[in-house]
Length: 622
Image 1 (cartoon, rainbow, N blue to C red):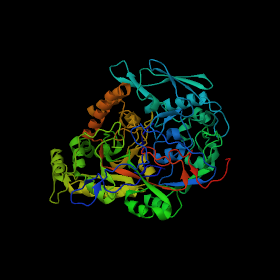
Image 2 (image 1 turned 180 degrees about the vertical axis):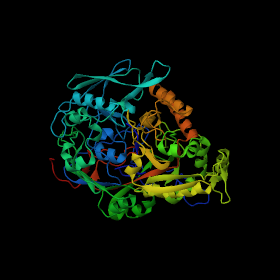
Image 3 (image 1 turned 45 degrees about the vertical axis):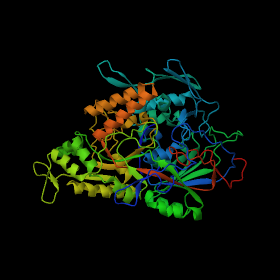
Image 4 (image 1 turned 60 degrees about the vertical axis):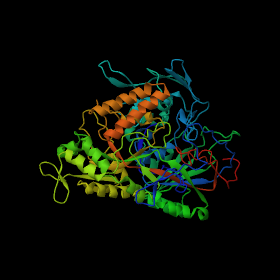
């Protein structure tokens, strides 16, 4: 439903894909490598949303799947997570009322049947499927749905889901406010939602995971919800994390592994009415970095790999020997960028206001874009398996991607000109200084576990120094990095310090519909990273983004919606709150031991893991 910070460029927990040669690619100048332009493999679903789902085959019970991740979760409470380490660790434990099918991109019922919608599009009624149970045997009822919404809408809860469940309505003062839905329980299996206006992304909005009231209600009532189901608790009490998804947490050893077992009460059944999933379990190894994920896969310790582009040749060469298939899933939907802290109220801005005023000058951010040699990053870091990126949507999003956004490509001379217009002056070595003689320098941080991102940061540092900016690059722990960005202000307490200057990161996890990234672009949003949780827009272009996202959500004509979201991409590409760098291709490797593999560009190779089966499994019962 919402976007998350990504700890790696690869599609998390999923397979990647194979780039098919150099056909259809645009060559770099003075290079035998190319910007990727090849299409996804023929067995990969189209991202157009018009693809028919291949039929499923009945499988046998048994076997497991092992993958790897480069970060521990920060929490096992999915409703307060804002990083993919946490959302990936818990996502397979919980289902929603409805969700998009990652292959067809059409919405399907999960815990509920598809909703009944009133003629005016304002009333949405969901009926839960009969006989639903949590993994501990407790019934899943309308009370769980109501509880989940009570939690999400509570201002004391630091949740990534809050913004996505607000509808903008007039505030009576000439502005707008985010209003919650009106919701109520009609009976034990029925919940009704009322929208104040027709809302185009309503289905995505209502695709929130349902929380178990009987397991979390006491913590919420006592004011401990934000800290409940932390990593220490989960390591000692994995069975306490009752689940509705295909898996339950069996064990968690910090820094080593997560082990999941089949949920005995999972609601899905195959065509023969046998319970799913077929696999006995899932294991996720926690490893130091992306280099190690590749070594684990080639050593036979894991079954699926999001192939780092710099490892593609090595992995591809062992495809036959290792009995796995490498697939091209096409360009990733994840965005990658260098971002600057624009918050003049932050602690580092108070300490160095001159630097932060510079960050707020759009000419500076455009100069940074002009300084970045994206072709070199694609060529040297991604081995040609990437393309330059300039905006918030990527070519993977065929429904909403705007290829005509303003761009500020590599041009060091223009970068220096823009920096001079900012009032900066070079010394004898070409390094820039403020008018008072103070050197222009700042920290650039990224997560150490992502070696591709570290390599990218090294090039960015060199690029920025080449135009006179003393960028000091450092790689740190991912969770430490994220903790600097996402703290929520609390009434009566000092404001969070937001103690950072610039970062190299990326976003992922959002919906095909740009509304799924509302929690980044709305000025009041939690992942409005450069200055989150604004009470009103600080900058005119932020006010325009607020208006565009508000209008786009309320426009029911899809052609007009696309034009509105084209405008949002234009604003972001012009103002550059994030200076985008490259869009890598998603490369997946999956062992040839599983049936019902249905790869898709949005879901990867294992999005339907509940129906995948080990081809050597023999049991007829779980």
